[in-house]
Image (tube, rainbow, N blue to C red):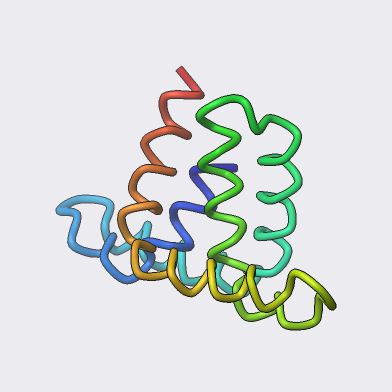
Length: 107
């Protein structure tokens, strides 16, 4: 899941890769249509394995993907929205890290 979340976050810059860049960019933009579903899954998986590096990265990716929806949560919504907006500044870096961690997890 970290690979999928990372592709969604890096859809804008991944096209610069020489061979597979165009294909990966189209896949990332297609998956961007499922951003909310992927974000919820990433947060759930991140919370379930929060004590591993993959869990922490998955949680951060989920927070970034769901930033626009946190305002509906009554008490914590504004704080999560603010944290997600701040993390959004590091969206590309976290996306690249998520892809790398996801690939390492496969190995």
